[in-house]
Image (tube, rainbow, N blue to C red):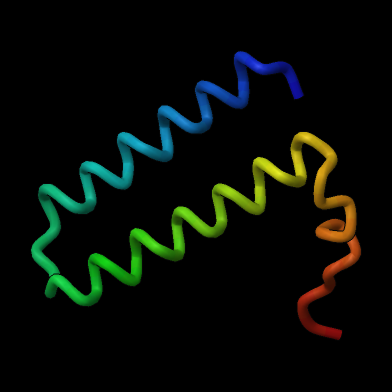
Length: 63
């Protein structure tokens, strides 16, 4: 994946997270959990994109 696409995806995810945090009323604890989940998913995705986490493709959900 080209570096420009990675940067665009990061910008889109950041803007979407900012919009959710700014305009959707939620309890502070729920926002914290949402932010943590998004950050963890993005870090895992980045590790996978750069090939540092090749075992991520072997994870199966379901049967």
